[in-house]
Amino acid sequence: MKGKLISILLTFLMVSSAAAGGFGLYEFGAAASSMSGAAVARSWDASTIFYNPAGIAFLKDGSHYYGGVTFITATNKFTGADPVYSGEEHTTPDKLHTPIGFYFSHQFNETLYAGIGVTNPFGLGLGWAEDFPGRFIAYNTDLKSFYVSPVVAYKVSDEFSVSAGADIVFGSITLERYVKNLDDESSNGVELAKSSIEGNSDLAVGFTASAMYRSENLGLGFLYRHSVELTLENADATFEILDTYAKAAATALLKDQTVNSGITFPNIFSVGIYYKFLENFGAELDFMWYNWSVFDKLVLEFEDTENLGTIVLPEDYENSIQFRLGMHYDFADNWQLRAGYIYDESPQPTHSVSPLLPDNDRNDVSLGIGYTAGNWQFDTGYMYVDFSERSTVENGEGQNPDGFDGTYASIANLFFFSFGYHFE
Image (tube, rainbow, N blue to C red; front, side):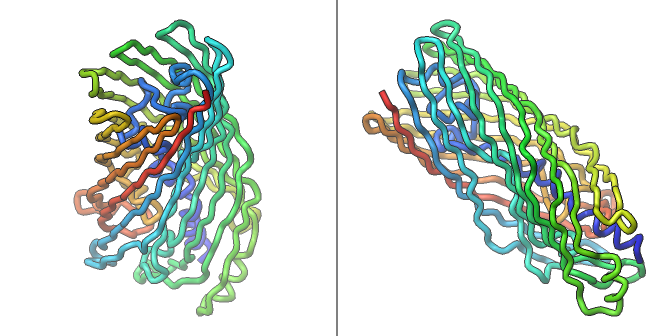
């Protein structure tokens, strides 16, 4: 039984990388997000600290505050495949997620600018009911990252600026699932324990570099964000042993202990072009590249070296790309309509698709509106995210390593709210 318990337990921490892959977030300002995040080549407010920090050199003179929250609701549906879970349908309960984006920028003189932003670009909150048949992989997951990002920008000329900055990063994780004994391959196993892992990462540091060119009608921009590796040390792993025939063996193997691991967030490269076609209409097209291949493996170090020890898990994530198209129409004084579209390629291979993260290529559309009143700015918007369907069965063969095969269909709804103020 020991070997099978270990093989099932290993999936417990795989969410650390899977969550970052499928739930890389980019919606940290309602104005930019309403244009599908196409904001590398044009700065609209202080949220440019996240999208392209060089853009703070093109904001109005003085200091700027901008901040807000995104409300995310998602629906995930699982339909089981032959032979074990054929035709079973399960849907995740409603759950609300609220990533934040807060920024402040300041102009020191005609050429020197600085700012700071607080965001959480990688995270996952996914919960299934406790009677969900895939609860031995996951039924409750919560992963958060927090980026504190000080930046400095230098205006080389009236039309060109450069920037450099740091990302100070920390995270937290909570994972809950059931542990199964699968010694009998002909059965669906017996549940032995409810398990939970909770922990906080150490601080990690990354950096950004960016540039922006801006003329009256044309904008060009690029951003590089370096990868960050978070270290999870002494996370608490606890086990509530269930009353089954294997209770004695489970008690001996599944003891409360600590576990060490690590999460690597990828480096990102973005380029964009903006053009103002009319006095009141402009559009931007961005291309983004994510180096998800940093997830080649995940190392788990359990305190119980005799029964669990150190395990290396293959991840096999692939690099991915995004295309973002955004546009705005200034339909009246102080009023602006916005819209956008995103094609977002998933980095997740089929064998990694599971209740932890049922990811897929995405097609997103966004709409929004903004209003300015003196030095105040108010923005709101909406985005619909379509994951379509993705099956873990290919050519008639199930690919999930735990034998939990089926088809996932997911959608997400995002609502943006932000406001800003210009200190002259």
